[in-house]
Image (cartoon, rainbow, N blue to C red; front, side, top):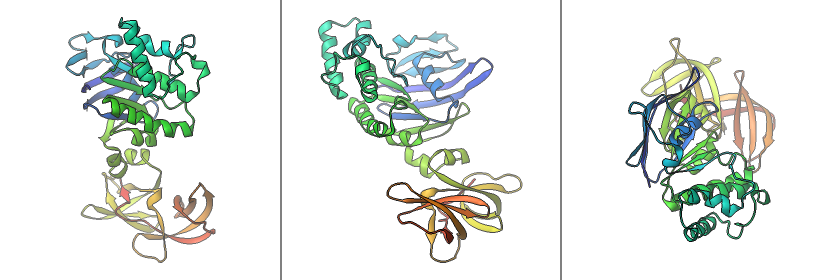
Length: 351
């Protein structure tokens, strides 16, 4: 196991600042997801740790070794950082067998043939690929190729493994299965792992901790549950989960609660961030927290059901409220018409 410490890392590509001062401490045995939309800097951070990008300034430490220090002009090449790397494309050699692909890193380290054969057999067994060592990558399914790429990264027991969207080429069913066994494998081997993804469900399923990036900065860092239930910004709230948003004006406050006026209607919610100078704010509520009410009351507003779709085990409905579209789910079908929607004020966040 290895602790990874990143200190004030800045990366500039051309005239663009991609990373703007990333500092993070990745603990022994921790699985951390670097999450964010395309262009936020998550892959650049991973590549900087791997030695595939050279930061403008900052420091990177793996265990008790400094692998990068811009001020001290220390920059170890990737092969000297002792990392396991799994890429989105898998990067398997098509002309080499599965066993030869997996053994490549051990051959570079000049290990004996017996030691290489033993390690390859053990790691292929660990990823459920016994008996396929003589096959070429083209003879394997996408899910199997992904396991070969992971086996190649793990065969020499690196203390730190870096995974750059390794599940993106799999279909939905295989991705769901891969989330479970990849996390189990990493935990069983006691590795520290960084996992780049733009999929918040994938991040929550695999990671102990999520670092949410935007514009080259970390905007929130915490457990999956913390990011989902305690977002610190409108960006974090919108990125995690499936949401309804209502723009309006804050017209009253009491403690940590605020009352938002939306098209002549009002809702009480939890204040989660500063509002604009004119009181402009946005209310956010997860789709699963919005429900139907049998009668009017506080935080219960009239809405009109426009359409419904069946999504397997539940119905998803679209309502109109004060000119805004809102989504909610029920177990049963609903007929178009007038309804009352309930907004639990402890689940309604106002930013």
